[in-house]
Image (cartoon, rainbow, N blue to C red; front, top):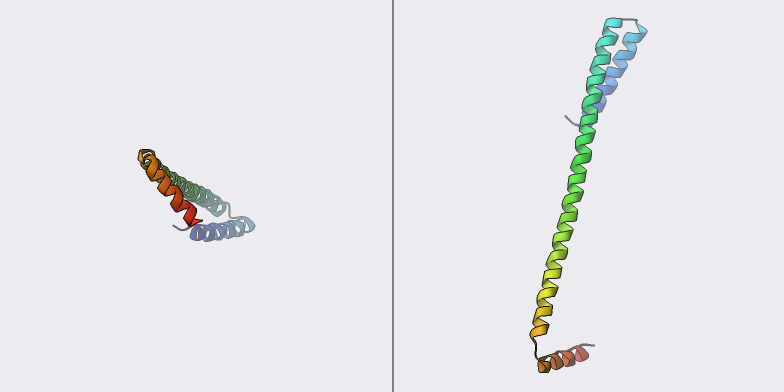
Length: 102
């Protein structure tokens, strides 16, 4: 059940409770009070589920960000290992290429 629908039902029950209280119909007042408590509890449960769902989404985004940073780190390590294996002559050639790039 959607949160908006629960809100609407809650407001309807509240209005009926007010009417029953004005009419001094205590049995209906009691019935509507119990229904309101039940609806309010359900409303709180929906809010809790919504908050938990959003927190899970945020955690998933953080994990995805960490995974992306790990991939970047692994790529940099691989490039560093390539550079380590270059000879001095190859490094000089790379240095020249970089100067030409500027």
